[in-house]
Length: 519
Image (cartoon, rainbow, N blue to C red; front, top):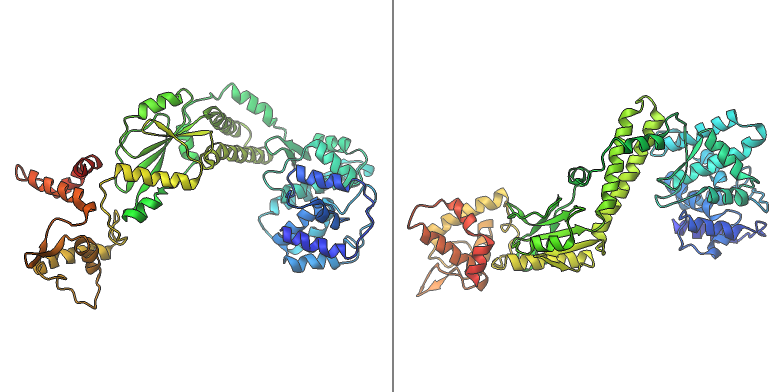
């Protein structure tokens, strides 16, 4: 997008105009301060765009990208002449080629596209309806200026990002120095009074508004006395978030065994043995009454691979959940046929969810001081995603220290494919029939899946090797397999006393037993 701005600036600079607007720099600063434009765009570039202000230039490039053909459409705009074009624009000391002019340009040049159903249809329709209401409600001498304000607000709503803030003072300043409106404050109040626009606190900017008799702020105030502020937010967070599985990269590359950590949201710290494909847990703790010291004390004796993330500002998260509860309550009590009020409630809910996301996910993944990371009762400093993932692998190395090094991604997984499952059966058959053969009877120039298992698991580890002149199965020469081998032998030894099911072996091979065996 910035590239298009620089192209436009270079082209306009070829036919420079004397700058009549003394407040052009102030408009540039307003675009940066309100976050409508990127601070990476310097004033020299913005000056080269004159008589188009930076607001309009930003909106132009975005509309060209969204509805046009990038550079081709841009140069068509710059070369155009006639009514509404930049070249024919007659600036004054209090006007620029503004956001209102960009609205007119878009409507004229992209009318066919905008007439069809698209992602912005509702906003464009909203601007059209607002203009029609102005024309029917305002005095003749006020209509032109009021329409400019409506177009400006509409274009900001269309092309401003989520971080844009545009107060009454900001809108008034822009209206005075870009739209040539002498007393914009009065018109803003009048538009507000007619419920054509409203200042949305949750977005910190003006929005076009179709009007409703429902006092949403008043209804929310009433809801505060009805809807309890509950500190138990775990269930609601579970509904709002679907956290991914974390994969310990280094542990996998070093040992060949994939290690997965699952996120668990709870009020109290969990203490559980990981099951199935899950090797560890990342436990997100949301509890206003639980102190960090109590959490450290409660988790000091946890031997499993469990990391605890302690959120320090739970009160803010609880407030966002409470606001969502209040909005849901208001949504149910107001008339369902009042589409405008219902739409405003939905917008408020979307905004509140975005704030909740920021207070949970952004805080979690920014790895800053707002979250304390605890492992076995000790606080650990995590500075980045990379550091965090390395830490997961270190925990795997500590908890699963007896894991053998077996690098075969086709087999070393919780659920091998059907092909590899069949290969295991075939390998067992060959072990029974050809165990004395150096290569279990496999042909040298052929590599079926079972041969891959044989090479990586039995031959390379020394389990199948020559002993006293004959090939047979023996204890592994690869030291990383010793703990596993010893535990399996202990299991077989225990079966002499009473019969044991082979399925019990997986329980027998728990991290504690393997670790003690290696020690």
